[in-house]
Image 1: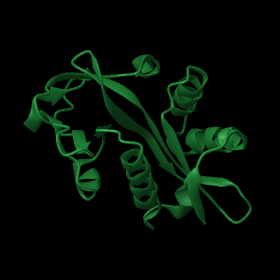
Image 2 (image 1 turned 180 degrees about the vertical axis):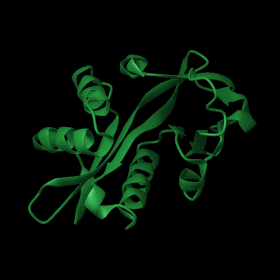
Image 3 (image 1 turned 30 degrees about the horizontal axis):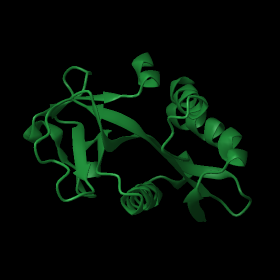
Length: 167
């Protein structure tokens, strides 16, 4: 198993993984659109011994209260069904957080299961007066500060890139 930054040759494998993992086309088309629009900040892949994509985490820019504060959103995160519950998703998230930290990004937001993402240090965004456009997501919308001051003097709507409007 190799975990690394995605390269162009991975696109088809990522697409196939997302379609299988989510049982539809939405997430695959989202990532394709982010990539085409130059809005894919970071993609982390896990490949098996044959080079097939078995895990993926995408990070794309978000705005906070209409400003670019060097924040990104984590979505989607996918692991091949045969490899779930073995820590691969965790490795993908940690690899992404480490890379984003190295490139001086300030924070990461995610809309996901609080118990899962809480293990990484994500905190409820509502506690910082941050919210997203999807109703009734207060418990699931979370933030992870990469920079010490990332959550200082910031609040309001966290807006994902336009391709997320499909959801």
